Amino acid sequence: MAEDAKAKGNAAFAAGRFDEAVRHFSEAIDLAPANHVLYSNRSAAYASLQRYDAALADARKTVELKPDWAKGYGRLGAAHLGLSDAEQAVSAYEKGLELDPANQALKAGLADARTAASRSRGPPPQGASPFGKIFQGPELWAKLTADPTTRSYLQQPDFVKMIQDIQKNPNNINMYLSDPRMMQVIGVLLNVKMRAPTDEMASESPESEQAKPQPEPAKKAPEPEPEPEPMEVAEEETGAKRRKAEALKEKESGNAAYKKKDFETAIQHYTLAMELDDGDISYLTNRAAVYLEMGKYQECIKDCDKAVERGRELHSDFKMIARALTRKGTALVKLAKCSKDYEPAIETFQKALTEHRNPDTLKKLNDAERAKKELEQQEYFDPKIADEEREKGNELFKQQKYPEAVHHYTEALRRNPKDPKVYSNRAACYTKLGALPEGLKDAEKCIELDPSFSKGYTRKGAIQFFMKEYDKALETYQEGLKHDPNNQELMDGVRSCIEQINKTNRGDISPEELKERQAKAMQDPEIQNILTDPVMRQVLIDFQENPKAAQEHLKNPQVMHKIQKLVSAGIVQMR
Image 1 (cartoon, rainbow, N blue to C red):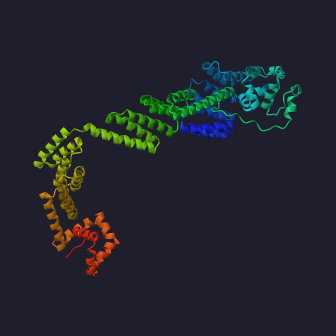
Image 2 (image 1 turned 135 degrees about the vertical axis):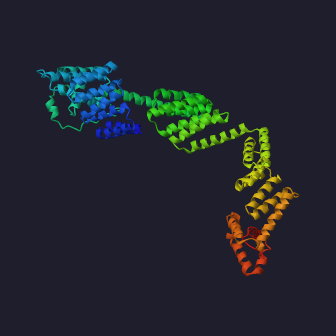
Image 3 (image 1 turned 120 degrees about the vertical axis):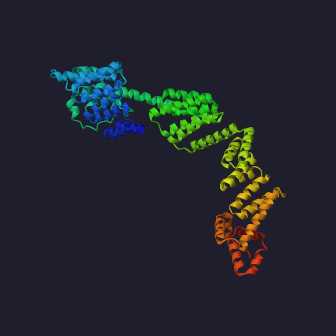
């Protein structure tokens, strides 16, 4: 994410690792090439490396992307000044001040640029202070900000005015040498370790100070967005951090109130957190959660939409955006009153899953789709129309127009999916059309809806008979006779099945037909279990090798049932 790379760049810049900062800002620019702040930050890093050509290119890009941003012209002026183009620097700073006349950092930069321009037009005046040159150039404010002591001075208006006065006229430094702060500034600018300010120190010459061992240059202070105006950046940084810390406290207070079910208080805290820091969409999503608990679904949806929109602008974590979308979808489900109302909720859940595939979101999507389907069925339910469609199907069946009959039976089931007669009728149609698996499924559904309806058993048994699964058809017919013992159609079915099974046992069927029946039987899980049972395998061996022992096995009802199952399936023949 661009924000992550930017944060790494800011941290590296603050630590003085400018090459690393450039690398991270470049990565962020690749991810967000239209973000003017990233070019501005990289320009500052290039300037710190004294690579002013690159700093100038980034500054120009910053101004191009955001021509009404005063700080961009500060970058531009600093780069021109680093390239010793004082006239262009003056022009850039003046343009920035047109946009923000009260910007002290731009005013200070303009003073530097004008001083440099004056020096470039003629020789320096005689008697100029030897310290004058160290107060010129774009590095002045950066060095003062980097030192802990002088950084605090920048908050003092008289100190800032004193430095600006010296920038305008370096000879005025002699007026301020009695100020202890000035000696500290000179030490920082010369990279010299100064002793505590005393009158004696004020009289020491620069040469004696320069003779002392020089420590490593102080590292620059952390900046969230490195700008060429150190004083202003420090103020912004402090204010932003303070507001962010206050916002987090408000969020924690809101979380505590939410857990206590004190929703109104929670909303107040989350709202204040948003006002303090609009760069974190979690405040919006948290407030949306409160509205959801309160049943204020429209308010919840509005907050979620704002969170998604703001999250896109900030390039927020995709998980945060997915969370906002999921919360919106949940609110839409709560508002749904008919099947069509579920459509926007389902669409929202699908969008959330494209951002982040979360199991909770997936479950909510499946639940919404299921609820929509159930409502559609309820809305379409009409027993009267279902009966009319069934009668139309019956007429077409009599005319042997089976596809058309299936269409009307299907419509009847959509209108009333609990009518077993329609399933029975459609099963008969499928049988006529040779669609035996579909017919079997309808017959089984018919029996499931009404186990006492004999037509369901006759339909199922007939289909199994046509599929040459005589053992299964026999079981179906026998099950139907339990509910309707005198049903002639069921009794005829039993006789037909027994006749076919006996023909198999007598060997009155062709080898091809026997082979076909056995192949089908071997696909039956029950037959497979019988044949893989070690006990039954031994029984079958005894039938071939030890008939006396086999007779003993037949006294066991379970073994006898399994043998009959194998015989009915054509796997075993009894002669």
